[in-house]
Length: 385
Length: 197
Image: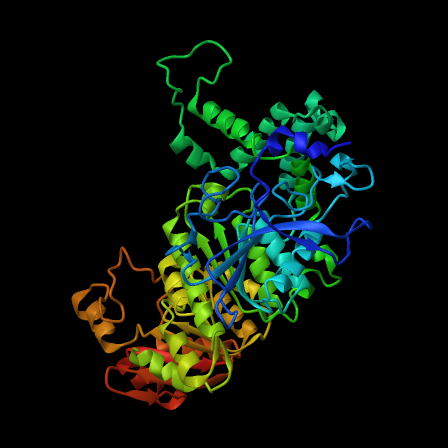
């Protein structure tokens, strides 16, 4: 049978020119299964200097990918973190070498449920093993070897990216000089598991999903996936931010239509976010990645809890939270700070005042970007000595 | 660096670990790191000050000393410094206990409400004092629990807190304060710096 993945309508993307390595080292996953010889897609920005001391690793969030800055060559849209990464930006690519890998389980070139299972010659679908944040992080280790980087100047990430970062620091305590976890948590809260479950149920309730086998019909459960994305987008905003942005404003109309069309701007916004998402993301990937987030509980991995997880850590941390973020609250971020402090780790913390909610880390939030820049630049001065 | 910080810095031995509570823009910490090889951590409420500290490469946690000192483990610092903030807390006695829990020694400085200019302002003019060390008026002062050097001295004795050294600070000079000269120093010192614990 020819490669079915090639038939995938959302795979009709310019995905062939993506940078990839093949990870040959077998990776035993937390679920017990082993993967090997798997693709790991990545992108880099800027130039690695001769001393190899200017490398910054970025971990992407749930629906992100390796295209942090510039233009995403697949979607032709801005990279997901152009506000922070690029020439002259807070993470200045004229000065630093920025690396980001697509998570396994994802759909931008790294091994994921839409890839061909060599055993069946069909896309994995639900035969893809259930992965964890730890698996995701361990899969990325060989990329640093491939790029010849012994120790990173800094590693950073927001949301699920921050969770990967905490795992990375706990699992590889010597790999980075400094770390900036942003708007994240050391264990997924009940509320966040609930929201992820809502997203998954939306996908699975779509009859097109067909137990994850939609690829056989060369389609994708668009309706369910779009609803899943809408749930996400609501959780990324704050009540106040949403009220200010949309209020009760109507979408290009003078009065109610007395129908179920998108009368309100906020409805139109959510529908747009939902429909554009299905063009670039695989529904099964959402299931797998949200599951990995839900299983994340760093303290459970260590007998002594979080304090033990961060023991022997010489990495210098800056934890950042946003005051109106109700998805990964200031309290959850502070708990990380407290654990780091209790482990005697060098940790700074800043709570950025904003009404933009969880999304803040992706937006042009001047105070946030200034703090990020100040930290990374001062760390570079210390690291290069 | 202001005179008060110089006096505080002199109290802190080289190569120690210091927590600066209410560290402001980090100027004291910066001095301690560079000149005395002291490992510092700061706690600061104001976001701009936190940013300043981070720019200087200093380790700082944004937070409120009144409610967030619990995050620092027992006896995890050689010294804890609190500069001219004790009087601004809702419960200064609890904060002081927390500082003594976290640090093996504690340096606390207070604007002295027993200073003669403060006393005369109230005595002769019947007005709440406004001085260089107490620049605010009654309605906008952050100071909730003003005290004198004598008050804090007595408090430490009552609470069995070991007083290691007390220094009175004025514009031009500093002087050691003991039980024997407490009355006079309490009248003529603008600022009191206590090393306790």
